[in-house]
Length: 491
Image 1 (cartoon, rainbow, N blue to C red):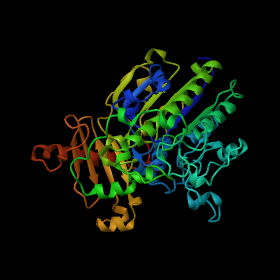
Image 2 (spheres, rainbow, N blue to C red):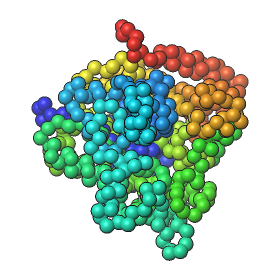
Image 3 (cartoon, helix red, strand yellow):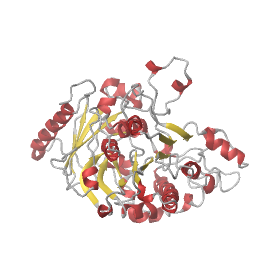
Image 4 (tube, rainbow, N blue to C red):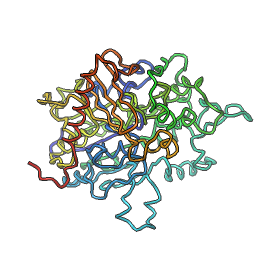
């Protein structure tokens, strides 16, 4: 590492589930660049986002706080002005965090005039970041302008992610291609802009936050990624387990029909095809991450750069008959985390099995920048793992949350819930997983050692009564220990 040279590349891949890199899908998807980086970094195999969907997940990731504290608990729920975050803290070390993509932050309306246009979008920029390239799911004006300049007859933005029919006059199929070529895709465009910007910063320290939209739905991919994988070659999703009243709500949040747009009606028969497109999109992202890594090597910056690659949350991808992420099962929360600390090459290739949380990333990054972690951050620095140490008294559980008011007032009323009751908390160890509902629903308890696919609810089983009590008490204690400390005296 060059003396006094510190660079940060912080990559978030939207909706990439952990088993694409390690697990059931890993042998069926080509991710050569991520797998090569895994061999040249420290990978955390039991890493979980503490909440979802996108906005809340990124709020926790970037602030180091549980959702119960930052309270930006759903897409469109504002994040309080002045909440400490990675970007604001990094500025204290002289870094200007550059944003290529999005943070999905909804602006605090108490800090702006009611006519401020930033309040019209839920996809604004978190305090402290300098937005270099806007690439938002609901906007993406630079990409649109780029495609138009390339000569595309661009459709209305609402139709950007519609597949183009392979046969003229017939409805499009889910695996038909996007209207843009692979070299002009959103993923390619964002990577191009990052490389252009960093090419003139090679002689200085920098902090780049790169956030890919893919493989987030709608599932549409440019050729050849749209048909890169044969549906018949993929393992099928897990079947639904024991029925539970929450299933009616979670299934409503994102049915299979919402995973694709602008094509013929889809149903469960299309599950494998959609899984194949998802993996194609993941491979496309991997290709462009490879371009970024190659750039760092070619410009002599690779061994000056802290590289962090993770996801905001997972994707059910048909498991349990469910799609997207607003659910209680592991595929929605279990994500990958790779960290390459150039200062400790002896640890590269290490795989960590300890339980880690998305809120650990912020303290880890600040630790590497030699900055103190604000008391309001509940995460723990992973730096000891990067240096070959095992922290004493490391956590035995991860704490996960979900607010499901997005199900809508009618559905909640049918379930007998008020909006403030539409939330749940999860405590997960390596052996057991408790899902505690605020009100109205009985708990879920899974024995992960004997039932890793979470099929059998043991909450009412007499043999697990002690486990249920222990996990419930542990959940309560965890929440009490991690209450908001922003104005509390730190001892």
